[in-house]
Amino acid sequence: MNSAKKVIKKPQKPSKLQKVGNPKIWIITSIVLVVLLIGALSFDQLYKRTVLTINDEKYSMEDLSYYFYGVEAKYDFMNQIYSGNYYNMVEESTGLTYGDLAQQEVISSALISEILYFDAVKNNYELTEEEKDTIASDVDSFFTEEANKELIKHNDYTKKYITHILNRTTLAERYRRDIIDSLNIDDEAIKAEINFEDYRQYDIEYLYVSTKTMDAVGNSIDKTEEEKKTALDKINSVLEAAKTTQEWSTLVPEDEEVLDYTDSSFTKKDDSFSEDFKTKVMAMKNDEVSEIIETDGEYYIVRMKNNNSTESYDTEVNSAISTAENEAFAPKYQEIAKNYEYKVNEKELSNYRMGQITLP
Image (cartoon, rainbow, N blue to C red; front, side, top):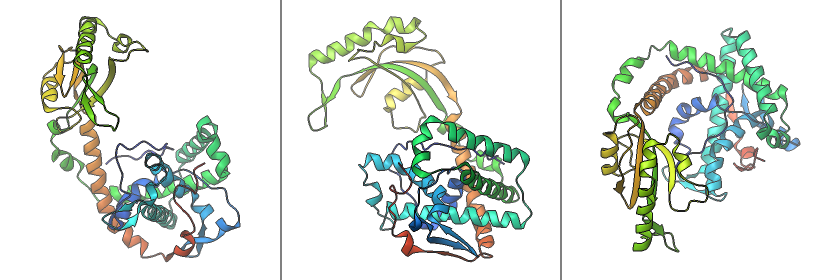
């Protein structure tokens, strides 16, 4: 089985429009979120009003700020891309706004984590000394990191609060992992169903020039014949140097306007490069430098860094195993949840707008 390591993570930038999710799979998607969240709020009496009740325990917005920050941070990049309107957009399959779905994701994550924590305690679970030390180290790191200063000030974070939250979520996560481990999910069988060649990753770096540009309204158009000749001459001028230079970025001066350098990776299923380009590059040996490759209006010089990387394959395998684990765990969680009474104060939640609760 996979082992889960508890860390405080920063949000990552998604590459495309994300859907918050379908309510039918909140249990599955929220499980993963539980171990990634960290945060709090700055509150007045309004924030003390109960928004969630589990048995006799009442949770205010202040109590749930940890979960709200996790989801707001998760989707903040998308909200910025859409000029602050992401949460107002409608997800077609549900008819709900992304803000509504994100808020439901928060409550679902909090509910799952808190119920699992209560059930873990009921089953005599306690934090290990190693877990306590890890939590203390994570909290110290979070409060000393310069990038978090504004966030801490904005939300009145305290070490006591963050430690309290991580204590509960860490115990809940270990309890969840133990349940999953008891289900005897066959990781190797799942792995065997995934074809390595489909996800074999090719790590490359390349120098390139383009014969395309953008018009005033953003349409791709051909450069002039003179500009095309300049581009081809430019990449031809560095071909020999590329064959003997280890650090290709040094071949592109800071003020260079025609030639570019980057590193990248792809699998044969990717559509980031043309089929012709992929066919030629996939045939290259490690450390081999190509001649000039012309494709899609661009000229490339490519160096193969690793033609047999397992990164994409490993990611796909781990994703498939995680999906299988979450699907198997969902009914187990539902059995546990039947032993707890819980209620969501939808009226109170309607006073809050995602993206405007915890982020400075």
